[in-house]
Amino acid sequence: MFTSIPPALRHRDFRLLWLGLFVSVSGNMMQSAAISWHIYDITNSAFALSFIGLTRVIPIFIFSPLSGLAADRFDRRKVILFTQTCMMINAIILGVAAFSGIKLALPIYLLAAVSASFGVFDAPARQAMVPSLVPREDLPNAFSVNSIMFQTASVIGPAMAGIVIGRVGLHWAYWFNALSYITVIIALLAMKPRPQTHEEKEKRPEISVAAAVEGFKFVRREPLILSSMLLDFFATFFSSATVLLPIYAKDILHVGAEGYGWLYAAEAVGAAAAAMTMTFMPRIKRQGQTLIIAVFIYGIATILFGLSAVFISAFFALALTGVADAISTVIRNTIRQLATPDHLRGRMVSVNMIFFQGGPQLGNIEAGLVAQWLGAPFSVISGGVGCMIAVIWVARRWPHLWKYGNEMEQKAVATD
Image 1 (cartoon, rainbow, N blue to C red):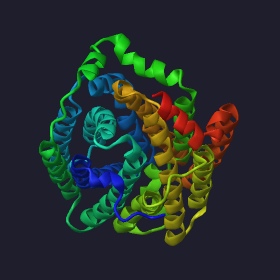
Image 2 (image 1 turned 180 degrees about the horizontal axis):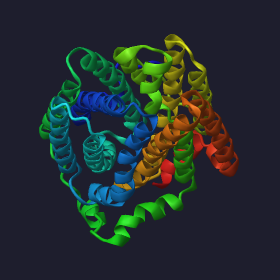
Image 3 (image 1 turned 45 degrees about the horizontal axis):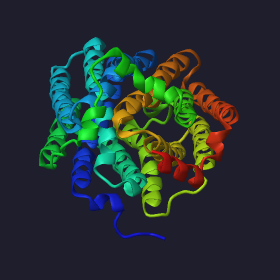
């Protein structure tokens, strides 16, 4: 049965955060697309594009243990305020670099790495704060509407990037992103401070190596969480084709900067449609099976994109990857948050970042190197095949993930 208003959006503070992040994420997606275009415009090299993934993945491996600990130790709202402000300043500097007409890729790589470093601290605090803003029964719905927000922003941001780059200049894509951070900062300041209970203060971790690695230990001893993270990592590692979109737009499909913006947004179009449908429908029952099938379809859609020779087929193939990804993302997030106690959520999310963000960024490196050697279509198609093989391996290695459903979820809720 469909409902008129998503339950999660009935809660004031969650609604404020959701609206602020919608604008901020739109700007961030605009900047991500702009960086890829900027690097390719300077270098005209697929190999150079692959290093964008490196600039984003190195901070994850360096800072993720600290970022998860910070999210569990400090006020999560204040952590997000700090990271959003720092990313705003970084976007301004990127815009200045573009406006100056710089023809060196290294400064752009360094600024992208700085932005990614602050993002590593932002994500665990932001995701771990969600369960404190909505009741437990509304948590799956909160992830669905968050997915709508993220995917819709992922449509608007790259599409606007293509228009802005093509009509008023690359530097404005960075400066519009800088302005977008103001909305989430205002939303955070308007939220009601949430005092910690005595029990929460007692569980607040100390700043130590042991506390930092506790998130890794927790994930390792929870096979359901570990298997869902591995599924995410291998699928995105093999099927990551985003970094090759400038090549497709310029050299294969011949659609220019505006066409590039729409290709970059195509996955989000499909994801937003899927997330919207999931938000207004009852909870999925056979969640484990649905998760695995969705990621398998993600691999098939990637192959279809690799085979595309015209814009419309490429767009719809990428949109299909978005549909599959949205379904799997909502299910994965629900599984992990329900199975993780609040005092470990920040550290669990930071570990998940290694899989969720490390997979596609390392995959971008792999895709760029293979494209430089054997061409972009071969890189994309072989990645889709690799994704499908990885899904089969995870499903066979952890059969309980395939069996996960409402009964197992209710058991997890009862024992939390």
